[in-house]
Length: 210
Image 1 (spheres, helix red, strand yellow):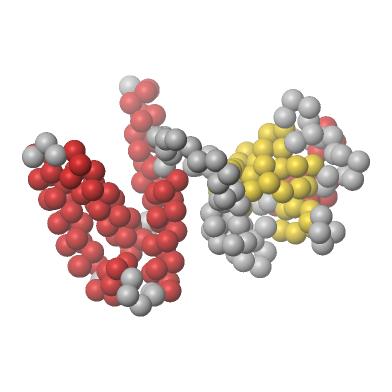
Image 2 (tube, helix red, strand yellow; image 1 turned 180 degrees about the horizontal axis):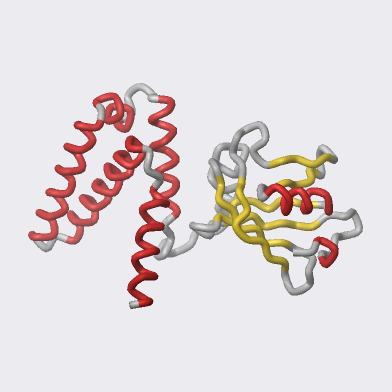
């Protein structure tokens, strides 16, 4: 990308939509000037221009929640950027994954949305770190891997029973329990859920080529 091709506004700024490269969730809308854009291209991590502080800022410089750039695109008018990133932690200063977490209108269906898996992983990671008293996830981590493995086994059996009984309502609940406990196990093992998704993607691509 040649920054000289970009059309900045009268204040020398350019809106940049930041999107998770894997989940495709929109994380935030920020602004870049020419210098922050060039720093982003140079370092491979997002840099922005703060309109309130009137200065450059490196995303994650203080929080550690940096964003590694995977791909950058500009629109047909060359006056807006789409930046696909691999985020290291939440994008929002509130601790939310995305700055766009407040709903104005609620979608009638959530089909096709898998953001809950990412949100669940974040919550479980926080539970492991903070260990709030009385939380079930805290209890699992304190009991250790043997307890977690036992629960994964129990929930797997419950899924089998529900399926065998042709009980879709029970199967739905048991499958949700299994996914939760599997997420706890992955966090305990230090294996990001996105690595599992990446393996599925690689297998899918392999089938397409065969």
